[in-house]
Length: 107
Image (cartoon, rainbow, N blue to C red; front, side, top):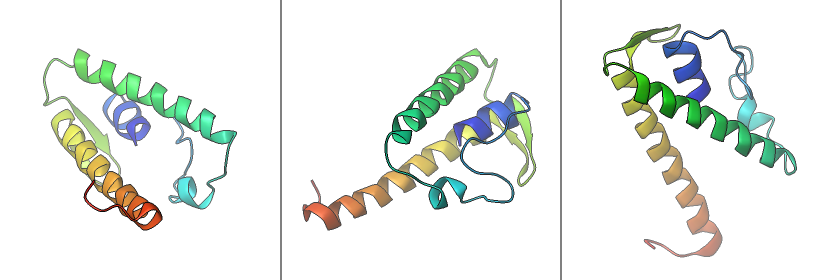
């Protein structure tokens, strides 16, 4: 998501999504494969996070805008809050899976 929101929407770069597409929006899940591709995915994510951090740090203000095909005009402020929501949601999903595996609750 960092690639889409920070590179494509806010920075206006013409980039393809790495693991999904317009035609296969769930490609990052449906096409998931085990190692060794995990290492490449981790590196790709690290690259996108570094770009997002650099972009946000260099922005003159949080009202910098970009255009998204689904949501229309969005600001850097909105994207940052949206990313927090996404990480919180997915971390919660991962924690539920972990609880089913190890049985530890509330740890």
